[in-house]
Image (cartoon, rainbow, N blue to C red; front, side):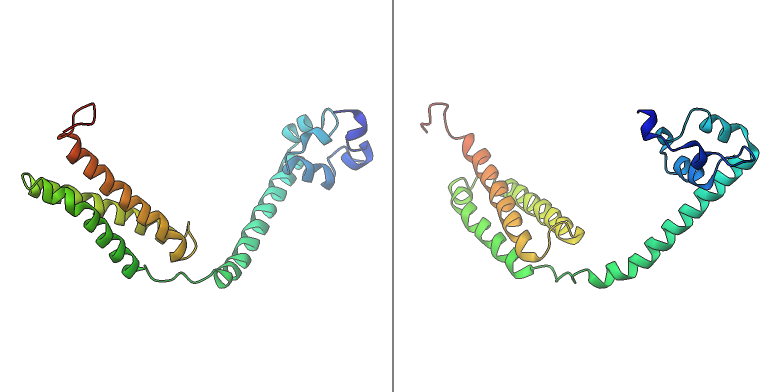
Length: 175
C-alpha cells in the first residue's frame, strides 16, 4: 500500500499523542493498512487507546446484535409460509415405484421376503431424506421437491431391480 492510501497523521493522532476516534475505528474494523507505522504498536502499548479500542469493539457488537434483533421479526414476517408435506404426491410416487418393481419381484418369487424388506428400507430412506430436504426449507414449495423425491425413488427401485436381475444375467447380456 502506498503512503497516499494511508490516513493523514492529523486523522490518526491527537495532540496529546493518543489515537483519534477515526484511527480506533479503523483498527476495530481491521483496516490496519490505512494506519501509519506505529499506530498499531501504540494501541497495543497504551492503556488509554487499548481501552478505547475495546469500548469501540463492544459498541460495534451491541449495534450488530440490535440490528439482528430488529431484522429477525421482519425476516420472520416476510418468510413465505411452508406448505404441508405433499403426502398424496409421495403416495403416488411410491405406488408407481412399486408397480415398476412388481415384474422383477414376481419373476423371482424366491427370496421375495428379502427383496420386499430391501424395497421397504430403500423407500423409507428416500422418503425420510425427502422429508428432511423439504423441512429444511432448502427447496421452496412442494412442487420443487416432488421431482427430486420421485427421481430418488425411481433410482432406488431401479437399483434394486438391477441388483436382483444382475444375479440372473451373464456378462454378455444373455440369460
